[in-house]
Length: 293
Image (cartoon, rainbow, N blue to C red; front, top):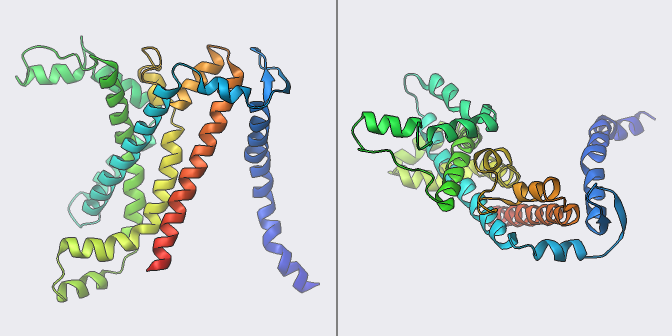
């Protein structure tokens, strides 16, 4: 009897979490999958089974290709650059210098602040008429007249990506920093005795040992950035004509403004499948490399 209790005790402790995940994660996913194959009225009433019609309608939408390209560029640029810059900043913050704790505290502000507030502030900074960026550059004499920082939708989308990178860097930095602080200093001392330089130690000691932290941050970042809604919606709302939309903002506009519930649901499932594939490929690649070491 005592042995059976010990055997089932871990599962009983996990049971509340399993129930919560089932109710708030698994069940909604199943509902959305079912809705994507059903007819949905403009008011959201789910009808009968219609096969892949919602998916074909979603792919046939005029803005579909543009939105997919934007989403790909958005995820790759934000995740890639924030990861690179986060590693560099984490390496610097891992060194001992005066005021290190203050710098770490300041660095977390962009990540801890609401994304709506961040996007609104950056919207104000790059305003043509009275934006802070133009005012500072004019006062310093760097420019002679105000610059239109939002001259085209391509430039606006680059600004959105820039804000995304800015607010994502702290998360990557602290994930990598947690891995750096777990590395035994004696490894670097031994490497220095053997004549190893900075870059040799970086690629042979630092990066392999922080790989678990970097893997977690990258996978979470892909999911987080792909599903990021406030920055794009606050800065441009996808204007003009969905040219600056990502998949998340587009399916929102499609569902609640255009009342095309069926294609919007299909798009959400497509996004879910894409995320699962990307996360799966990344995790399998990392695990294979670790097994080969």
